Amino acid sequence: MAQKAVELILMRQLASYLAMPIFLVDPEGNLLYYNEPAERLLGRRYDETGEMPRAEWSTVFTPTAEDGSPIPPEEVPLSIALLKWHAAHRALAIRGLDGVTRRIAVTAFPLEGQGGRRLGAVAIFWEERPS
Amino acid sequence: MRLTLWGTRGSLAAAGPETVRYGGNTSCVEVRSVDGSVLILDAGTGMRRLGGTLRGEDRRVDILLTHLHMDHIQGLGFFAPFFEPERNVQLWGPPSTTQALRERLTRYLSPPLFPVRLRELPCRLALHDVPLEVFEIGPFRVSAALVCHPGPTVGYRITADGATLAYLPDHEPALGLGWVPAAPDWISGFSLAAGADMLIHDAQYSAAEYVDHVGWGHSALTHTLAFATTAGVRRLVTFHHDPGHDDDTLTRLLDEAGGSAAFPFQIVPGTEGLSMDLGDRRDLGAPPVVVVR
Image (cartoon, rainbow over all chains, first blue to last red; front, side, top):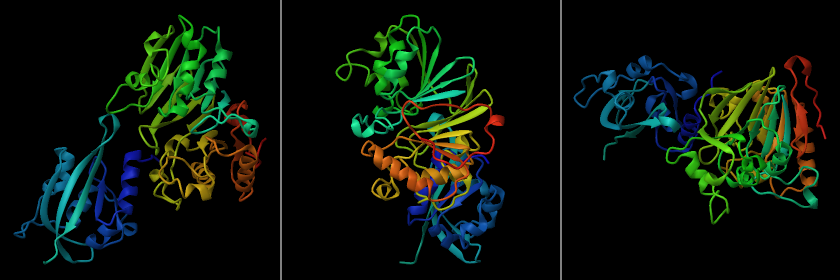
């Protein structure tokens, strides 16, 4: 079994300790991990979903813009972080696997390792709650 | 492939009557292939005595550094082949994003920390950032990968003469795991160690000591045993002993850990001066569950 890069392992470990929802993908955009706070937003425990191909997660959560129009997979912040290799942020709505739609803001950034290795990207979710 | 442990202590050399059994010199391991080619793993204080045995050989020497903490480089300034004109020495170290290996080593090998500058060494010295992929040095097939330890740190997997050695002297795979069972692909160092005939691994702390040293980059002996079990190695050499552990303490910790379960590998306490032949995998037979002294 091929081992993940140590930077990804450390990122997962850090995420598992943080109270903010975090989503981690590999260089191809495949889901590697999301932490417990993200489980509540995504509507399912990570242990139930496990790793997931990009084509699946980028549509299964049906991301929509503030006007309700669907957001193409390549325009979600994580895709921008991976494809354009820079940080991205936007507000959107997702429908969790529990069927609940939630308004969130997403900040995503690429992960670059030693020697310029492109390791993947991280998204941090900020749930927008009525004030 | 034959290896000799010239230094097994971690963090700081610990010479004294209380450490004569396991030794007080810091990390240095000599690896020799059947054809006599030499690899040296790390350049701790154990390197001084090793250098004396190599004096006068005209053979090329390759030194693989896991990282640049002092206990892994302090022997460089006292390594006899460095002072032999025409001696071919190749020095490999982990890549950094900010400075070349030469610049980083020069911080030690230059005044005021050391009287001789790196550039003044008379040998034919070449420095290399170690590739984070498989590469070959003579008969040795070497894999290097970053592992969990503060600062750029690699572990090595070396295959030659039909046997495989994994070397992870400074490694904290339990960081963040607390050693809950994890999928192997999420364990630092797993690919380097998987199925190795011999694993030399950090075992600095007792389980109780580890609690106060989480994130320092080292392992509790219990974590080392769990890592070796997951990796499916045939022999485990405990290494990087804490400088505060005297011989009696080390013996007690090893006896307690070795007797705590039936491990599917042989446990060899890392002992300065110990020389072992990895042999051919076919010659090893079923690994006995014993502590070798």
